[in-house]
Image 1 (cartoon, one colour):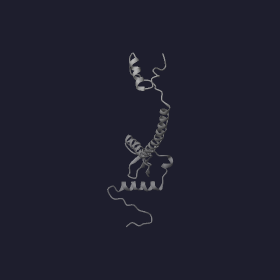
Image 2 (tube, one colour; image 1 turned 30 degrees about the vertical axis):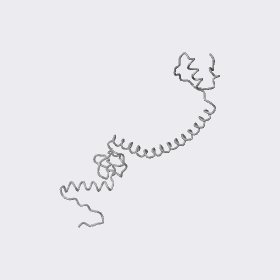
Image 3 (cartoon, one colour; image 1 turned 90 degrees about the vertical axis):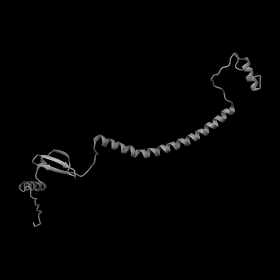
Image 4 (tube, helix red, strand yellow; image 1 turned 180 degrees about the vertical axis):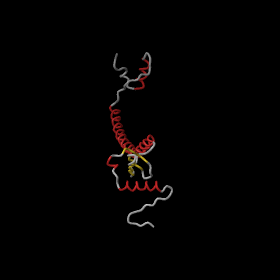
Length: 162
């Protein structure tokens, strides 16, 4: 088959009619149509302009995403902590606590400043040795047992009872 038909007809509309008149059948087909030099040059210019616009918009998009990310970060971190607290049904804190040694039971307890036991364990031999604090506490226990129902009197050395 010939590569070109009707090229001797210069008028494009007349060439089109010649092709229709001499065809056995006409149908729609999808194919690649070659572009002219002018069309190629125009497409190259359009491509370059679009590439510059795309780069500008991508830069704006990246800046917007970075701003949103900065706004989201504290919320994501807060939600992670909230979720952990919900799972534990409590929150992890660091507070000053009081260590109490019960020499009779041989146990050590750690209490919050509100008086809530948060941890207990067996006492070590060093912790079972008497101290001034334990002597005062033991004296109060004896006093409390001797004067049940009556207020206890605490004597501070260097002062007089009134």
